Amino acid sequence: MGSKRSMLLNGLGDLLASSAPGAGRFVDLFAGSGAVAIHVATKYEMPVLASDLQQFSVVLAGAVLERKKALPWEECWNDWHQRAERIYMRYRPARLQKVTRQAVMDFRTWSEGQDALHLTKAYGGHYFSPVQATWIDALRRTLPAKPPARTVALAALLHVASKCAASPGHTAQPLQPARSANPYIFEAWSRDVPTLTRMLLQSLSKIFAKREGTAKVADANEAADEIRPSDLVFVDPPYSGVQYSRFYHVLESIARGTAGEVSGSGRNPEPRMRPQSDYSLKRGAKGALSELLGKIAANGARAILTFPAHACSNGLSGDIVRELAREHFQVIEKLVDSKFSTLGGSKVEVGNGRAARHAAQELILCLTPK
Ligand SMILES: C[S@@+](CC[C@H](N)C(=O)[O-])C[C@H]1O[C@@H](n2cnc3c(N)ncnc32)[C@H](O)[C@@H]1O
Image (cartoon, rainbow, N blue to C red):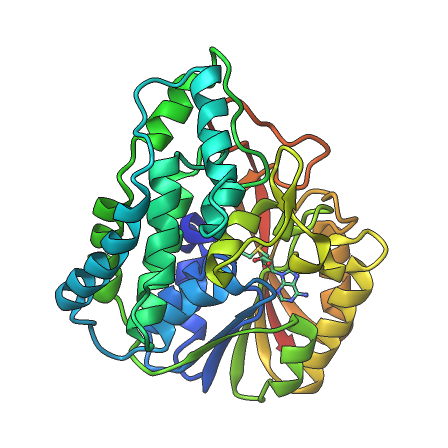
């Protein structure tokens, strides 16, 4: 998953260290991977509120923000694994021997026949091997009943699915069998879902917030109505003219527990299952950001805004964003080197087994209401 993790070591972490203490709450309105919200929640004594249009993002952030102590993961894992194994054993899908076009087609045929395994039916033989997909279905269906164990377990499963998907960086398109792609598919499909889930559950269980916070699905412009003058708001809006839900629909389906009807080589769910954002529309992004900054300023809060310095495919650029910010705030600016996913560029690279990323510069704007 693309995230601000590297920027936390490159300017953003220092800025948060000087701005966060003293704020009443930290509010991350575009949480994504949850990297920034989790960084603040685990370092500073303040509640963190994270929101995003996508459910999977809320699960990743909520698994840490909504908990003030470590989770007894071992007992949780043993019970969960036993429940899931009972389901897995009913299906016993064929194991991966070698990736060939025929083997992949056979995997797809078997998976599409599994009406009771919703995720396997949608994604088996495309993003995941049948063994992986069946485990993902079984683990998803037998999650611990109550939070926080349920949320942490689901977050672990989302991380594992992201590691196992045979796709380049995100899940817009799976790799298709071909001489050049087969080694990457083999590598991805050789990852063992239960082993990785156990590891992820163990490591996530030890990460928790200093003060209890919350994560929720919300449109940033609606969540901004709840902002208080003492909040420090983090704004990392989309820069892509293609909806993020197109790139993360597999994780979104796992978070929801079902993919519904899927179609096309990307195995895309129906449009109603994919959150749509004005920030990824050329005709909507500038108006949406202008309204958002106006609301934050009207509520009297400080904000940190990050955005690529270059012109982006949703029609926004560093210059436009700076200009919008200056209408409402006093602005202090910093420029840092960064790496961007080409997500949303005119071409999404698939088939090379690597996430498409390129070096660029990113603006960090420190905003104080006028
Ligand atoms: C640039 S990413 C944020 C990355 C995040 N800071 C991280 O470190 O992973 C933008 C995020 O905004 C979300 N998003 C898009 N439109 C939104 C809206 N109107 N309200 C809330 N979230 C939105 C997307 O789902 C995506 O997760």
